[in-house]
Image 1 (cartoon, rainbow, N blue to C red):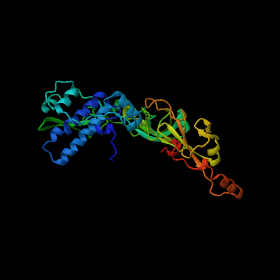
Image 2 (image 1 turned 135 degrees about the horizontal axis):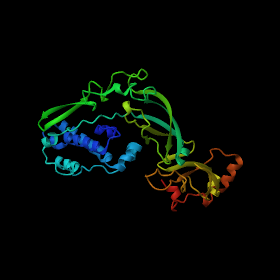
Image 3 (image 1 turned 60 degrees about the vertical axis):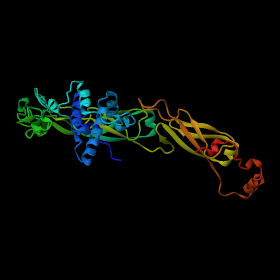
Image 4 (image 1 turned 180 degrees about the vertical axis):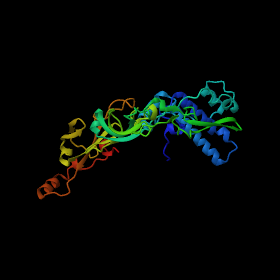
Length: 387
């Protein structure tokens, strides 16, 4: 199965994009890839368009929903897996309907109406730059996951230059809005096509997309406004988090030039193996081997849990494969996911000795013929037949 693309990457927007920017990005992709536009294309083109449209629709269905977007930003795909996405079982819906939904009605269905006139018009907005994200891993024990914890993470990141204060120049007068792109960081050209006028954007060739030009750059940072530093970030880990999940710490990534928006710190969780316990979701599992005499006569055994050892009673006649549940001794459910605390399941295996001494063998032989030691396959013994 192909790996999913990041939803922000699919729509071509930054992680700090507003709801309007997400909607705008989606409607451009919907117009470009909607299957209605590819009815005369080749089979390969139709298939590509369908896949691209579904991909964009799935991304928009998550990023346009504040609750889903928050879960995705914090935990990645793990936060939204299993959530209902766009339903294509009855087809894709007409392009006009999709655009009407996006615009709140009033879209007449003419592509020239959409692209023509004032598209991209109005006063140009100066571009706000965003720093790059930093991805790192943090290793956690099951004990730390059970209670939640706080970790100190050492990272190397770009931060505002100490000499110029992040401006890139000693004097503010040395920084001017790029005259080529008027501070937008992009150059545009209008292309006439079958569907009316479209606008193509490219990175400004003069300012490199920053929207500013520096005439007298700072010698310490060479005009970038940034310098590399090693710093420590304290990250709170919520209880019940799972291996592979990702926490997003907003604003703790790389800094951006010219006072832009910091990127995010993406913390990927790595769960360390436990010496005794195994995990599945928020349940824990432990295997205990007991002597055959304890299985026959019964007794008491000790089993480890995350908060200490617990005594459990072995009933006389316990079969190998019996499972004993310690309710509430698993892991807490991650906030907003599932309900309650998991359980600890102890699976009992009976140890049969391979070798016996002379006296031991005699003792076993003396009772081997007893009816109590003959298998009774007619009884309903769940422990014996439980999968």
